[in-house]
Structures are given as structure tokens and as C-alpha cells.
Image (tube, rainbow over all chains, first blue to last red):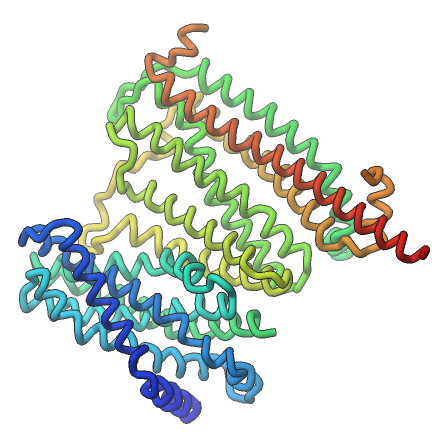
Length: 223
Length: 252
Length: 56
């Protein structure tokens, strides 16, 4: 089963690397959205420092969500998805492979670029590190939860907007604790631990249940 | 008993049962609603003192709490019917889930509206990102998402099953979402918000609240049954029993 | 009676709430009634069309 996972992972990454712009557009969306807020609310230093964690997280949420459509769309369009569903390997393993590839290409870049955004919001060293860690744990959860939505809205017209409507409410716990962790780290580093524990718990639960739910959703959508 | 249960899971038999029951539910809703409101307005003090003083506007509580409880309960009902549908693969279960949801969404909106109108005179603001109001808003989004997904899919079977899965995922996420909104800082979760306990409430006010909630519940049965009957007619239009039904009702 | 309507000066808030409730719930019932009539008419039309086809 692990081999299956690796095969799918390698396949998806290879395919995506042939269209590198897709990966970069997600990243730039993240940067642009984060840059819009100071233009909208003013660039006073203290306020930006206060808003920073929340803004970075909302931008990460939106970028992550926009990228979700691509998770199953191209495979669905050329019939590969149906072939995957007919294989004897458990669909949830295949799904996990795809989600993992998806995260590596869309979520991980966000984690790496986030400190730059954090600097724009006048956040210091420790909060930046906390932000990276929180995003590192949180963005996979976003990909995992989002995959369920992507599977449910597969092939629908108006899919992207509908997907956001379905998935954004489900993102709220990750948003609350993710940005909370960074906000608290600016005051007292020791308080960050429960936040990370919660995010970690979300990740574990999402890893356990989301592939199954996504596989079920795929079967519903492709029949 | 088992034979009896599945007897009504056929749309044709349930159709007439629902039709007979609807007027009773409506009547019950109106009667209990009027009684509860009378009690709530006339048998209760005009102003409340104590730790949480409220003036006459507190009478909004009856419709606010009733609609809020219904909004939450009906979401559970939608998820319940969805689960039954996915497990037993019965068409009617899916139809019931889809029928209950719009009423739930309406109650959620009403809870938000009445919450705002209660908030203005008592707290001084139309909206506050108070955990309860925020949770209710998120619940509204969940309902809208469910309805949007179902209407976006043309194939009835896929629509039913996709929406059912979404409802169940939503139900599982609801405690997590509500908890994260209520308790955004796990370091200091204990002290939060005004915890109003049921035992502190004046008996007459409680009666009004529970009574109107019950009335809303009866109303929900009525609207759900009305809606499901329309859905059954739409989907089973090709069958002979519908043709007979049309003759009974007089084809217009 | 006037006292009841005035609700201690908060009439706007209280009656807006109950008014909205009545509006929403009554509209829902009326909309459902209309939906049923529309469907019956449509299904009836289809049936008549199909019966006419069969006879022809």
C-alpha cells in the first residue's frame, strides 16, 4: 500500500511540475492578498502587527482553497480518475497520495513564503517561527478537509465558488487556532503549546478520516 | 414492527400519510404558539432585575431562543435522514433530508435577525462577534452550503448522496467549529461569556420559551411534510400511483 | 392594550422580531402551497400530453 501511495505521489508531482505556473499562481495569490490588507486598512505599524497573524492565515486559507479545484479536475476530465477507482488498491490510499502531492505543491510553498509576509506585518523572529510551524501543521489539514469538498463538487458548473462556500466554514477551527497561536506567541511563548497540540490533533484526525470521506465523495460524484 | 417501519418508506404510502398529518401539525403549531406567546407576554414581569437586568425587550427571547434551538435541532435532523439514506439507500430518507433543510435555514436566519434586534437595545450594538451569534452565523453558512450543493447537481441521485455526505461531515465538524469559536484561546477557556443556566430562569418565561420552541417544532413537521410531498410528486411523476393521485385531486 | 403595543418604548425591536417571524413562516407556507399547485399542474399537463399521444 505504501508503494501505491508513493507511485501516486510521484505521478502527481511530475505532472504538476510540467505546468509549473499553476504552483506559482497559488503562491502569488497568497502574496497579493496579504499585500492588499495594508492598502485597505492603513499601514500603521502596531495595527499591522496585531492583524498580521489573522491576515496571513486568511490569505493561506483562500490560496489553499483556490488550489483545491485542481486536485481532481484534470484526472476527472481525461478519465484517469475512473480508472483509479477501478483499481484493486483502496481508493483512500490513492486519494491520500494525491492530497499529499497537492499539499507539497500548494501548501508547503505557503509555509516557506509566509515569513516574508510576516516581516511585512512587522512580526519578529519567534512569532515568525511559530507562524511557520503552525502553517506547517495547519495547511495539510486544509488540504485534507478541502479534498472532501473538491470531490463533492467535481465537474459541477460554478464549482469553484460552490467549493469555497462548502469548505470555508469547515476551515474555521484551523483558522482560529492557527492565528491564535501566532498572536499568543507575540506575548508569551509558553502559551503556544496548547494551540500546537490542538492543531496536531486536527492533523491526526484529518489524516485518519478525510481520505475515507473523500473516497466516498468521489464514488458519489463519479457514477 | 419491522414491516411497519419500512411500509412508510415508500414514497407512495408516505405521501398520503404526510398529507393527513400536515394539517394537525399546523394546527398544533398555531395553538401552542399562541398560548406560549400569551403566557410569555402577559404572565411575566415587565422588567427583569438581578445579575442580568433586562427591560421589556427581553420578550424577544421567546422567538430568539426558539428559532435558535430549532436551527440546531433541524441540522441534526437533516444529518440523521442523510445517514439513514446513505446506510439503507432509501430514496425517501434523502427526500426528507432535503425537505427539512430550508426550514432549518429560515430558523437560523430568524435567530440571527432576532438576536441582532435584541442586541441593539440591550447591548447597544446590532452585531457583536459574540461566540453564540458567530456560531449561529456559521450554522447558516452550513445550511446554505448544503442547499447550494444539492441544487447545483442535476442528477437527483448524485445530488441526494453528495448533500447527505456533506451534511454528515458538517455535523461532525459542528462541535469542533462551535468549540473553536467559543474557546479561541485554549489557555483560558474556563471563564467565558455569560453562562445562563436554565434553573435561574423565571418559570413563566421558561414556559413561554419551551412552548414556542415546541410550536416551531410542530411547524417544522408541517413544512417538511408539505415540501416532501411536492418533491415526491416531482420525482415520481411517471408512476401510476401519481396518475391516480392526480385524478383524485382533480387535474387542473 | 396601548401598553402592550408600546412594550415599554421598545416596540420597534420587539415587533420587528415577531413581525419578521410571522413574515418568514407565513411566506414559507404560502410558497410551499404555490409549489405544490405548480407541480400538480405540470404533472397533470404531462400526463394529458402522454395520454393524448397514446391514443393517437
